[in-house]
Image (cartoon, rainbow, N blue to C red; front, side, top):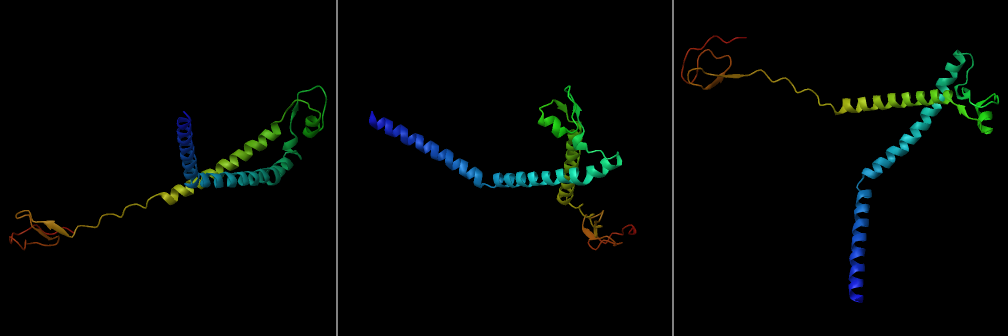
Amino acid sequence: MREQGTKALLGQSKRVGGFLGEFREFVIRGNVFDLAVGIIIGTAFNDIVKSLVNDVIMPPIGRLLGNVDFADLFINLSDTDYETLAEAQAAGAATLNYGLFINTVINFLIVALVIFLLIKQINRLKRQPPAPAPADPTTKECPYCLSTIPIKATRCAHCTSQLEEAKT
């Protein structure tokens, strides 16, 4: 009985070792590392885009629209009036934050544009160059003896038949 338990335990440890070995192989294979690097770079890129939108793009647009700070555009859904979104949120008031939504939409559009341009460049690099046009033939077949002769020949070298004039 004890021997059966030991065998079962050993069999189970082999399965766990197999699972861990498979997991280790999966992680080391490279795809996971590539994915992790992509996520880290994507997160950093997201921060850059947010800064671009909030610090570079939106201030001039807000200035053109009469010194509007899009981050402070909100609809107060409570009975109390608040000057800024931060005050309303600190008080726990329900708000509809359409200014933040506008910023987020612009963030998305910029990220989508950059990804589109990146994929477009990758596809351009992957595109195979067009195959070169086939070279003009340098030989033809004699219609009488079916031998291969130069394209400009007017008489077959094999059967001496007179051929039509070579077309240029």
